[in-house]
Length: 278
Image 1 (cartoon, one colour):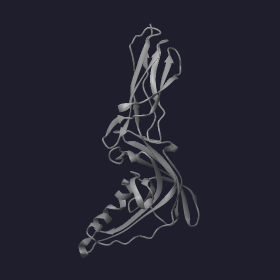
Image 2 (cartoon, rainbow, N blue to C red):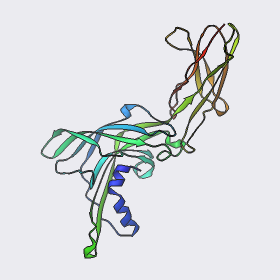
Image 3 (tube, helix red, strand yellow):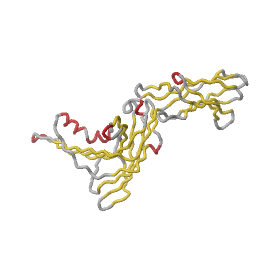
Image 4 (cartoon, helix red, strand yellow):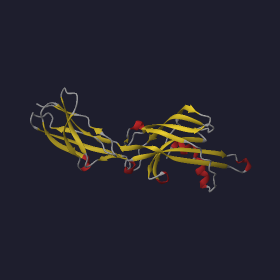
């Protein structure tokens, strides 16, 4: 899954393993990952088509004599979903090498402030509703040495891969959409307005937005000339995410539905529908 880490260091090892050629593991370096902040601490909201760029910042401490060249040796932060490091159900990692700035050095260590980006492509890296949940954070290090010169009738690959559980988490949510339509338009003052709408959220398995049933949405009104919407009432979505309620037309203004989100779905607000009251 993690394109940068696996793509740079693992492909050769996988090729050899397919041929049942044993590979030696490199020694585990003494690395530290801390102060991890994913997406500036905000939930990651993903729809069905648009790739989402997720910034990650962290503090990285490595031995002073360890060289990370981002080709034969790579390190960074990834996100995973599952009970533990060895029981992962899905994983997301950086697409490119991190950008690191040295902030402190000793005779034995180098401390760096690092930034990387994880690009989430819905459908390719998120597969099911269970992916809308809290993801854990891990640091990784992988390295390989290879000899592909077979002039001596011999090739070799030595590969090492390490992961460390790191304090921190990230919430990935499904994007939501809302619509609104108030009828009739125009309407007589004091007459009944019917305000309908639909609440949907991203279904990564199908690549479509599907109805979100049984969720509360606030019907809001902003009078002509006003600067802010005020909540009129709360409506619960029905089959296929349908919303419907009635109000008395009192003044010119706009109606909209607003959804506050849940632990698995992001917020959404419909574009206001202006009603002319005669």
